[in-house]
Length: 157
Image: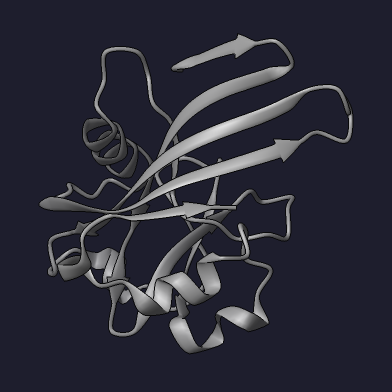
């Protein structure tokens, strides 16, 4: 993981994938947690964010990524309740992903596990995101307003 610490702030580099199909977005959650979020994770040293998200999608779901287009640069500053003196500054690059349309993942209609049991996945209609516990909260509005013609959007939350 690309990470370093300076004074009381830990810096992390992450990546995420946005897959939208038929007005629905693919979200994931840990089996014992209620909140949904985009697939992704930490970028490893010497790997690009594009490589990392494509590898994660393939490893976790068995689906190759055909193409990726960066749409967001996100900065999250998180204060941890377990350590009020430590903050995490997460910089994430998020990509709109294209997957093979013939893949069976597009036929899933309820929650499902990927190739391992680490995460549950679900296609959630963009108009129903408010009914789910989606984090970070800005995803609810931003997922409905992706426009690759405007370039990369910088979001600070």
